Image (cartoon, rainbow, N blue to C red; front, side, top):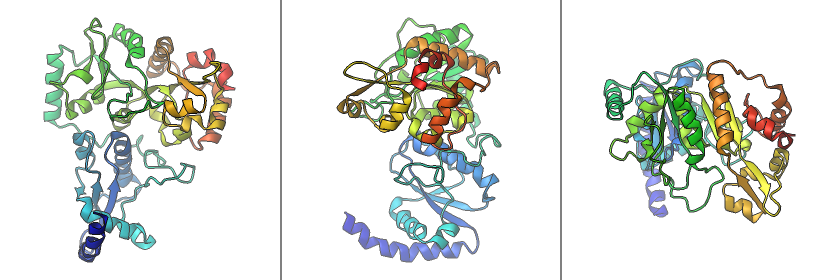
Length: 395
């Protein structure tokens, strides 16, 4: 197969490179590659690029031509993010893209100005496209627009569920191994059930809560308030469009560190991230849509002794992908419990009501340490309840 691709590469270059050069005399054209298989690798990058195109590059008249992965999560969202662009088969465009990308002059002129992910540690000089380095997201509304058919589908769903669309909405979710058919235990995973007390609290505050996700393995208990909808298991009504509609109406979201929380950035919604693990690449996040988090606790397996986060960073444990990797080194990781998430949810409501703005001097020393570990991270905050309860771990 590789021999076949090599044989056709030269004819493709001989045909399509001249075509692009000639067409550029009449209309600017740039080519690019978007890693589109999972929501977490394409949603925020494309949204940021759409905003940068207007504000930074003044590039709205340029035609962007992409090639992408064969499979794409939530194709409706992808199409809305690229509705002004052209998508071509990778067989045609990949050799053309690589030809232009490898030559600095051609890269500047014919390659989409995208901060392409490189296989090396993120640092201050190379932040991937998920980070809004030019702070354009605050300047422009979402580029993803719901049309009338989308809105009508959403309203029909609310009618079926007997939900008043004027109520406050909350979307919540967890990351599990089932969605990506993983045969290992990612350190980012956690049970949805630890969020139930928080969701019950929110429904008493007149919120309607939608448990989001696809192909999940744990259903919510059946005796919950009728304003808690287990959308993840609604196989009859669930759709890509409803994913967009429900997140667009949500006041904020509660989630783990998973691709689904990119909906928060797309629709400019604050997110409360629980069971957080990845301090090492926190500088790829946009802190102004990420006002609160609760990290997991790492501890020694042999004596159950919790590790300070400074030790976690020195050992690089948060860079490990799976619980199996941790166990091989003699460590384990502890998920947040229901009480911790509930107290964090109360803090999040205060933040939403402008009662608890970011001015926590108690955490400054810790965040200065994180900033050395993951440079240029922005202004984040650990739930005060969790921080005070475990303050010895943050020294």
